[in-house]
Length: 296
Image 1 (cartoon, rainbow, N blue to C red):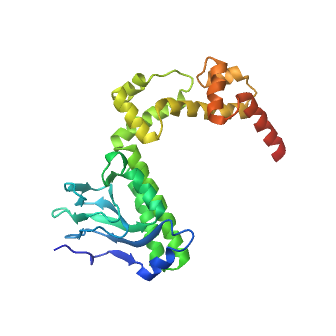
Image 2 (cartoon, helix red, strand yellow):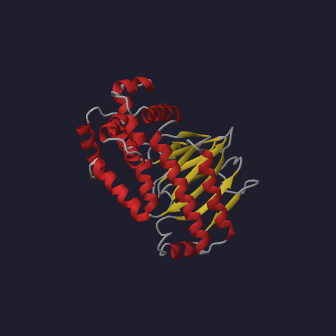
Image 3 (cartoon, rainbow, N blue to C red):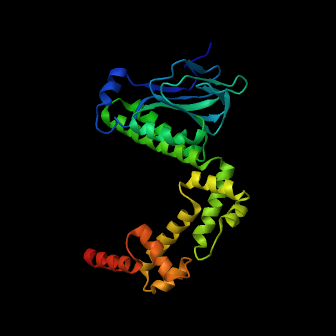
């Protein structure tokens, strides 16, 4: 038998179901509502089995020790410290603390359309419910804020505070899921940093992949997953952003701006710039100058 609660030093809040139903009709928190939250330190023998899942999505963040999770028809997976478990509503699951090294966890039950949108990304591309977190402190801080709000009371202002904290928590978890493992993310981030500081240099995908120590196909796949776009489009947008800055802050000719952001051909630069900004570089500069005059 598993222990559901009652751990020394625990914190726990469960919102009454009538309050939950009333909150789900409110214009803001109906999109994301925290219904339960808690903190269980060194939770020996802790565990839950839900054959039909829970009514809400469950988020568990392991900050110490370890545990196990089974989800749908998948085999049990170990949950290490620094990981989050995200279990969708209505899906069979089992989770439990490790027998020899029981976990310390922060957790919350959340529901609403915004939660569904986060889940669609977290679980996309065959990813399972376990996410290696890149910033555990930020996620725990958000969970602590949500729990603290519910510990104050169950009024609308506190439910709103908890919802805002939960949104930040889910955003951080989703960001970690997109970026992949910390080691892979570091490689991709190093390439991003290099691109940002070398916009006037031509790159090929194989060269960037070699920089990351990956094959071109694997690098391209990981880059798109972490950044949300291809290497080519990412670099084009970086160059466009720098070009906008130069067009606003300098009187340099368009040809010099083009060279500064990696384009030898000013006409090609103008086409690339227009594809993102909807106007030519010269028109963008005129519009920016007019806006400055209007603001003055």
